[in-house]
Amino acid sequence: MTTGELSQWHATNPDTYLPPGLAEPRPWQDGLDIPYWEAIERDELVVQYCDDCKAHQWGPEWLCHRCHKFDLEYVKVEPKGRIYSWERVWHPVHPALQTSCPYMVVLVELPGADNVRMVGNLIGDPMRPVTIGEEVEAVFEHHKDADPPYTLVQWQRTRD
Ligand SMILES: [Zn+2]
View: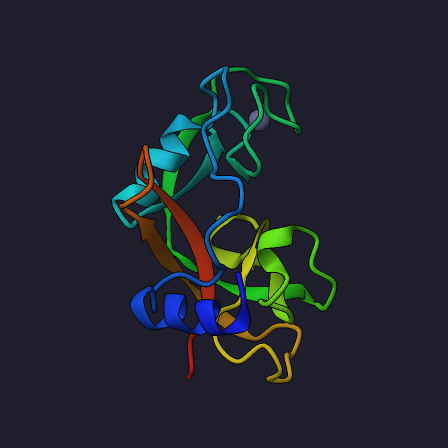
């Protein structure tokens, strides 16, 4: 995709952070993460929760890291966090990203869920300075035209 094509694509797809052509996410074949994908489709953020040791966990696992109990449940959490770490990506790691660099990748911790961490993109100006601990909120980016449709969780600064 040329720079001109990318500008045109962004003009018609202002709600997606990265350009088309990347691998589309799918639930794992074992079905473990299906509740997560279904929740974000409804603009809800969920993580795993162990009812035995009362702790949140992320990413999806079959058993609790703390007490080794199976059958963790998914619970809805507030879609707000703070930046734990970040990376401004200058090197296109995929051909579809050749005209999209730099872009921002953030590791967001969720204070409302035992500080579990999630990876996503920080939407907005990629050259804006980032402060560790900055508050962010989830943005549910729906790709309704994909086959099958899917949703991604991106992050934006709470105070913009
Ligand atoms: Zn546990």
